[in-house]
Image 1: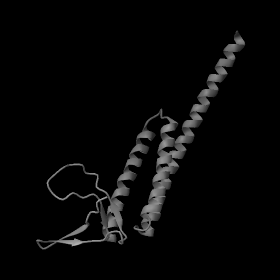
Image 2: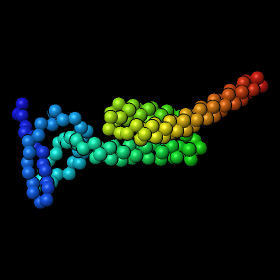
Image 3: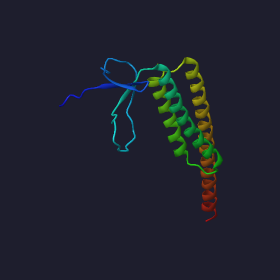
Image 4: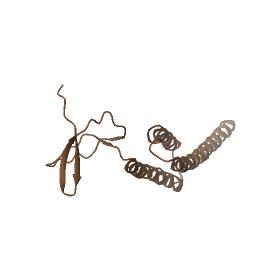
Length: 158
């Protein structure tokens, strides 16, 4: 296997320097870009961010986008009258999975105060999903009971 050289690019006041960097010893936030556009220039396979302020800003933006997705899903589910409890359970499980990712991977980069606010928001979303699931299950159960009563009445008449 061919060993590749790792470089760190520094740009300061129109001066560009290539500096060798051993990133395996550095502790930071690892990123692999998802941009698949081909262009003439530097190809970045992975990057380690060492500046904790930048890491915190990136993670806050990433978490905010994901929470907005959950909130939009919750709003769309609450607006609909007929929703499948399976979709709600899927969203609840996905939210729980995301909570564990935030706790295990991002906790060291985020402030305790922000983590508490974030967990409170996730608890609120989870509570709303659980109440909607309970409502839908009770509604399905009552419909099933009504169908069973109608079937038993028809069977008695025969």
